[in-house]
Structures are given as structure tokens and as C-alpha cells.
Length: 257
Image (cartoon, rainbow, N blue to C red; front, side, top):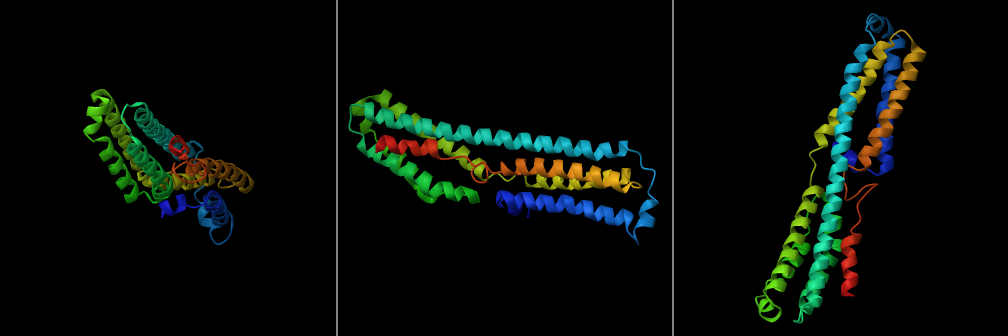
């Protein structure tokens, strides 16, 4: 369920949080100040203000840890894209600079890059790799592994080509691992629930003052909605409001053009 929510368009994420947190404001006002709930709820009077701090601190800490983890994962994804693009560029440069004709390698490289952009990038939205891209990478690696390259261009060039291709494959593996990572789903549930518990805590502290309770709840709900919405936008780095672009990898095709 939480994954379905995180995959909504940005406006859908914002409206869902708004309905949840401001809906809780309405529910709490009704429970504490409207019959037939008012009398039993008013009997809870006497809860001191520091009680509110416990759930609020837990909510703030966990939301901060979640935001930091999501930001760090976005940075890792960006580094993986840049590393893959850099190694693919190295393969192209070495194939051009070598004595032997390596047009077949450049063709395989172009096919792989095109498959990454056209085939694999859309499938990463579902947390999967593309079989066509995997086949294209295997073909590129097979072309580069040809022993004839060492005989015509030297072992140094052949080793450099192989190392660059392997490092590009490693960067691709890291990119795919990040795209399929859904380990934050449970953390999101805990953060959202803690936010609702914090609203209940605020209401209990202001149980006899309708206007003060309403104002405090609205301020907290607004802060929670804005914060969690902006963090949720970045949960999946390869799609969503702040998605990463395949442009660094796509630029390799211009070198082959």
C-alpha cells in the first residue's frame, strides 16, 4: 500500500497527506468537543505539555533519518550513472585511439547505450532490469574480450578496455540495485503513524481549549504535510518529481554518431 502511495504523481502524494493529517484534525475536534464524545474525552484533562515531546521527538528523529537515507541513495544513484557513463566513454575513446579497427566495439557500445535509455530506464520504474540491455552488455563484453585485440593493439589497450567495460557493468549493477530498493517502505509507515500519534498528543495537551488545540494541530499538520511530501518526492531516484536523467549515458551515443 505504501509503495502504491509513493508511486502516485506529486499532487497525489500531497493531497493524500493533506487529507490524512488535516482529516485527523477534524476527527480530534469532533471527539473532544462534540457530543456524545465530549464528556468522556474531557475526563482525560490533566496531561501535561511535556507528554507531547516524546512522540514529537520520535517523529522528528525518524523523519530526519528517513530524509537523510533517501538523499544519500539519490547521491549514490547519481554517482552510479556518472561512473557508468565515464567508463563507457573510456571504452569509446580507447576504441578510437587503438591501432586496430574497433568499429564493431563502437557499434556494440551504441547498441548498449540505446538499450539503456530506451529499454532499461522505463523498466527501472518497476524495479527491474531489461533483458535486452543485459544481452547488449554481454555482446559488448564479448566484442571487447576478443583475444585478437591484444595481438593487434597490445595487452595494455586490451586490459584497459576490459577494465572499463567491467567497471561500467559494476556501475550498472549498482544503478539497478538502487532502483529495486524498497527497504524504506516500513520506515515510511512508522513515520506517518508517528505523525498521527503526535497530533493526538497535541490534542490531549489542549483538551479544554478548542481554538488553541485547532491552531496547534493546523501548524503541526502543515509542517508534516510539507516535509513528508518533499521527502516522498525523492524516494525513488529514477522516477517521480525529482527523477535522475539518463542524459550522461545517452551522450555517449553522440560520440558514435
